[in-house]
Length: 221
Image (tube, rainbow, N blue to C red):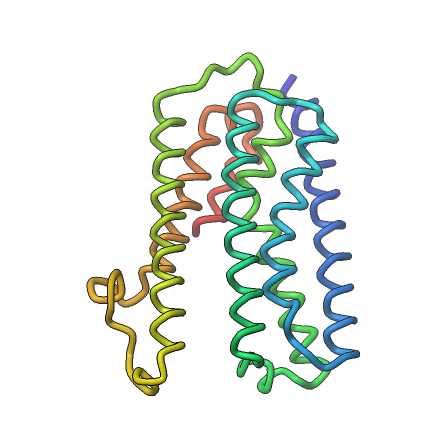
């Protein structure tokens, strides 16, 4: 049983790596050829959504844990990609692009983004790829899902507060210290870290099927 599951996970990992690499390299080719950087963050976040839905439908396994995971990842990816795309359209230019306009630095950034997507999505990848229909929902699953939602809300609120702060010309050159930013230096990153630890924890009930799936801890780390 464990060998069969591990083999199945290996196929899922290969498929996720291949799709991620192809999507990110396509994005790199378009962005470098056109010399613009408006799709970088958009393709980063939506890549997570693509992987989750792809595995969910390919494996045709729809346990409560898998469906909830897909909903949570979709909510996170759509919120983040929409926000980042709106932000770049509003500000018009990503200053980070100036530092990586040359071929190799730009390729390096997109390569890193591909690795980031693949590694951070590991918990959701394993959950979607393991048939856990015989594993009931545990209390820690519910706690993890609640923690994920809390992290998502913190991240979304922090992003919106900083976006509004920087769009106010009166705050030009000032450090954002309103709302959540008045109590934390990086509340958006705190929310992000919290939700990925929560996603890792939500898969604790199914990691036992294969020792290799515990590598999902690389995601929040």
